[in-house]
Image 1 (cartoon, rainbow, N blue to C red):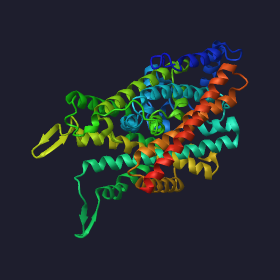
Image 2 (image 1 turned 30 degrees about the horizontal axis):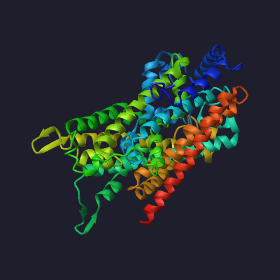
Image 3 (image 1 turned 60 degrees about the horizontal axis):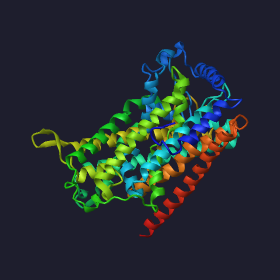
Length: 504
């Protein structure tokens, strides 16, 4: 899998895993394909994948990131049989599910870890592509009649402890991602405002950061109070489109200023091959952009040819690696050790495209770096309501009976839960405003590793233990071991880093 990324790295090991699965007495290819197709048909009928549901389904076969986020707990995306996805649509939807605001900090991750992060990113892409397959294969073990959701996968594997573990880790991941997106929105808006304090009532002055934080609830509260999840799609921004534009701007900045004269920072020409001390933090930031596995089973169930899903998944992760490597590589090569946590801060302050006017109307002008900053803010803003929604739904499910939460019409309790979670996210984000890199690393290294790497491997091993060959067992256990190492290592380094910052 992803052979073009790492010809001589983990490819032989993963090929052995898949080959072992193919020749195993209990997992022959023909039997698996036939079994998978039968299970997919059952899932489609169970979740409403028939022509009769067309009146309530989307007219497009493309899934929004918001719908896929909801499938973490809900499990079912209603679609008619006439709008099943092609292989290309599945690839695009997978890429759109993963690519988001984490792209902004990839250059900073390379600054922390050095050029060795290219290899780390390749290895992580292979590992997460494989764990993505594990979670999809594990979903096939969920009993027919049970909602195919991630918490129910945990229940199928380990009963109530597995169910609650998934719920709690899901809340942690979605809450952490909400804090990350809030900080990005605030910092992006602050970049667009004139510097200096904001004064009112003559003697009362506040910083531009505080002004943004105080004013932002005016746009955040209406978004999280939308009463049905499907309406959130109207404020969703395409991750692929905005990401491609951002990459194009960074590449253009370097092309226009290859000698870095516009950067005005001598450290921009300084690059490191490896920085072992900060490599764990960099790894956590890289993992943020590779997490999102819980939405994949819904994508597979909505394919015309679900037997092609593994191939589509390989191509999607290859495409993501190329996008991420291009963005991180050009950002780090151009800005060097001056690369900021958000590359948009570099583009706004000093770069080859800073101040380039796209539109001028009299004394009013719009520059390209302002347009990019607005796109970033909108992308992060459009993601927050979905994250808050799912986190609130998970908490309500934990408090109340889980079966009563699916497909219910949001009421006062749901809206109250969303409001409380947003308030808590505001407090945490305000305190962590200047340590966004650590926030991303912790979310990636702890929450994302748990939800998208460690748990899929553990669940798969538990559900397929009697069917796996020795080689495949070794592969899955190896993923578990690497997941635990990443989780403990990244968490420890980030805690030490934050403690040093607090002391200062």
